Image (cartoon, rainbow, N blue to C red; front, side, top):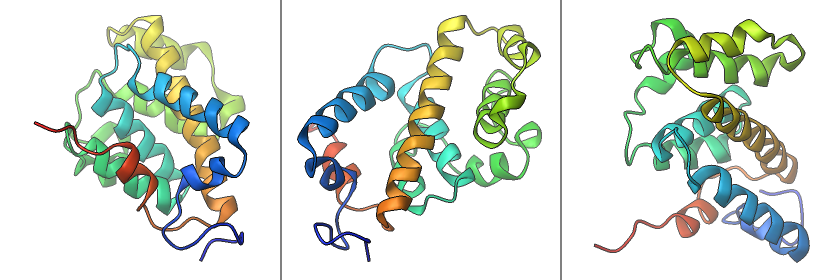
Length: 168
């Protein structure tokens, strides 16, 4: 059960932001730009990063929703492997430095060094990809804390309505 009287068991992030329309509008625009705007990272890769960060943060609400979204275009069975060990996970070698980076940025942000970024460049990514990975990581570190802070527990509602599958 959420911690606030204006929320119920099926409430999502949208209900939290609807309680403050100014903050909510800005957050929706930011999320849209980061998760769906132009990027060298595919939408599926960004959703997988979102689910990964949310799992690291033990945010059931965001992890569930973004795992389902990632599953539309990428193999999410690797999530458990990524959590256990990025280096042995069944993802491309090109993606591994990005996942190592966002894990470190989530768990020990003050320990990020130039070598962390250089490993991403060495895998063939440009600066824009690193910036986008940082943006997804930071967005979900914040959204995870909002979801957990408001007591959101099930991944219903918001992500389902906000990300309904397009009509054929």
